[in-house]
Each structure stands twice: as structure tokens, then as C-alpha cells.
Image (cartoon, rainbow over all chains, first blue to last red; front, side, top):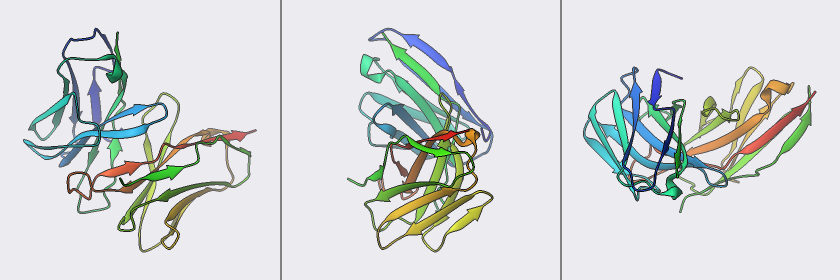
Length: 114
Length: 114
């Protein structure tokens, strides 16, 4: 998985609780991404980072926040989880946006909000 | 809204046949095109990518670009049952001004019958 880990791999939480998902990379890549994947919608970009402390919104950012204090870690936080945020979350990394833009994915986190 | 469209399938081919997967994209300015393979319950795995300047062959896989018609194809020769998976097409997009971000199609499910 190109030196990418995600934690936790599975989580069940209750509506209204905060949840933080972690993505850790050992590749020293500049760009990191958070996606969610749902049946019928495919992969949708939530937030991305183009460097330490540099982040921006993607297609479906409402209800999510991110932080990147170190090159290797990119955190995704659901401030108050809702059932609509039940999904599989993938982190991805990319060496540079100036190249081919290829992205490599982590193993994913399956989140269930009850 | 930039879009990438794929036939959801399933596409069923016999073992040893050529599987042809296609996707269309809406943004004429897209320059990089990607094919990912995703097994059920797993994360997307990059198979190959091409730039707007040419096609590419890698083993049993060939990616072709038709810029005039704005579609990308993936050919899998000598298809094997292990090729049975969902294939995602992605194109470089422009979320937040970053051309490194990818827009994904919803995927085509391929089934290779022994």
C-alpha cells in the first residue's frame, strides 16, 4: 500500500460523537487526500493537503475538518458524526501535482455511525 | 461540474478473451488519465496512467486515449478470473485550483468467467 497506513481500520460510533481518522505515510510525499466511497457515488474527495498546515476543501467537505501538522500525518475529523457519514474512508498520497498526479491509496477505514 | 462517466457493468467476458473498459470525461483540459483496479473490500490499486500525448502498454494491459471524443479505454488481453474486479477511471481535475486532484468515475465491474 505504498507506505500508507490508516487507523482505525474499523470503527462503530454513535450519532453526535466526534471521530478522528488518521492517515500516516512513510513516503515523504507532499500531497495527501481524504476520500469517501459509497455505493452509487464512487470515490469523492473530502479534503486534501498540499503541504504541512496547507489544506483545502474537496467536493464533499461539509461536516469534516482536517489537520496536517507533520508531513507524514493527515487527520480527518468528524466533529459530530451523523448516519450519513457512514462510509468507507480512504486516504491517498501523491508525490507531486507537477508530475502525473498519480495517487496511491491506503487500506481504508470502515466507519459506521449508529 | 467536471465529470467522468463509466458504464457500471457488469461486463462479463470469458477467460482468455479481451476485456475492453471505457470511460468518458467532460473536461477537455484534462492531461492525465488513470486506471485503478479495486477488489471487493479492498482499496483502489493503480494499474497504469497515461498522459495526453500517447497510449501505453504494460504487460496484458493497454490504455488508450481518444482526445477528440474525450474517452479513455483500458484493454485487458488474455483475461484471467483474477482480473475480476471493479475498474475505476480517473482524470486530473481542478478542485480548489489544484490540477493534481483527481475526479473518479463510479467504476465498471468486470467478471471473467473460467
